[in-house]
Image 1 (cartoon, rainbow, N blue to C red):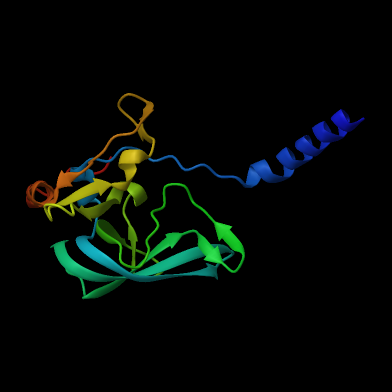
Image 2: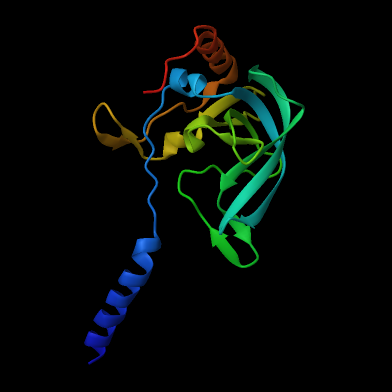
Length: 187
């Protein structure tokens, strides 16, 4: 009897909960594609983040100080809106959406949001965290998607790859060359 009850409860949970679960699949974007699809690219430092209900979903708006603009024109402070966050005791997590905390230092590829402010182009693909080596002081960038399985349209497989611990000077040079040639149009 208990086995039947467990099966019934498992079936009931599957019927009620599984349709609400949504998967996130990201296609691999090159640096050229990210640059071409972005309105701006900037090095930013997170000043704070606040989550709130909007249109039946939880959204987080993070505010940033613009440290360096690499493409486009930006004010000294910007707001980036992303899905997910915590409101009270409720937590909404959207796989593939970057999360920012006060003090985070990153390079972000930005798209203007229809809701105002910006969103990150390609989510984890358009987010590059900056870290500093405590011994040398050298800075490197690591793409958030370098640890995230992304769908490669050419091979039709999921892969974990991307920019990992690249010296920031090399990243700036590659990005400047990409922006100068206009980037590849996104298919």
